[in-house]
Image 1 (spheres, helix red, strand yellow):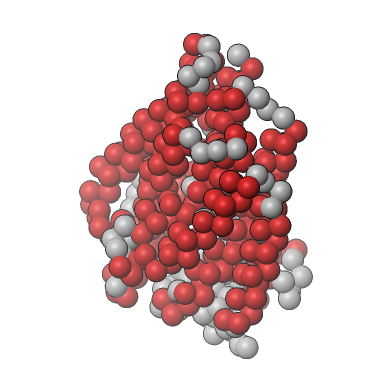
Image 2 (tube, helix red, strand yellow; image 1 turned 30 degrees about the horizontal axis):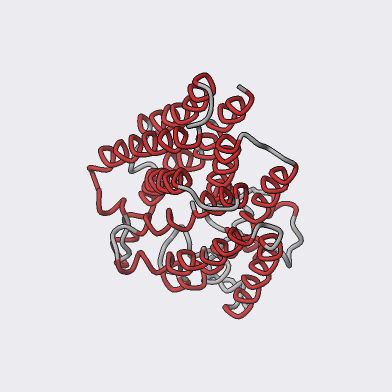
Length: 318
């Protein structure tokens, strides 16, 4: 199949100079790009709610074992695989839309580097390896992992029928909060559900920023997003998502720390405040018409999501 985008060496327009471009074998590059392994921020955003859940579950049970180390490692590998599978599925369903958007028309499928059948096979391989990892988790967590396929399957179509596709992304991307809490404790509990909703609020924050990159193209082809819905009112909505993330994550911390000491609770509560500080920093730099700034702010959410973890870890020792 031939490439039609004019990008050199099959590269993707909004991701150049990465390790896939410079070091991966040429035959592997289109598949690695399908999985977004040239852009790891999505893997981080899928992974961080998993790590939050492991930390808060450890606080709730006052225990951290070698199995939790495996949960940390296994969730990292699984996040990379499932993010890759999800992005592959997204590119399959969006192949006609992607071909109409300047930022995405150089992706492997619309540019002709990979066929739909090849992409489907690659998605199945990634799901299969991720499922093998999932089988090492407790039965209740395995059931939740299988159920996660529902929001993953629905998300690519959400932009066609709702102005709030970011909610569906949040439902899919934060499922790990439910799964990893359950993997540690053996059952689901309300702090994990609150953590899940906090993650959805965070997703609405960062993905609204991301979606502002494509508002003009999205309007032309009729694709919906919160960025288009909010328009000039986006800063107000982003502030609301910031406050919601802070309050919900704080509530989840309190729920996980009910049997802990007051110093432990105070230290753990610094985690949500650290995240809120970073989101506030992003909000002060939000420039809806500057795609370079928007992309930089979106990618900075890896650091934002990492900030609570040291406080959760120290709280476990207090």
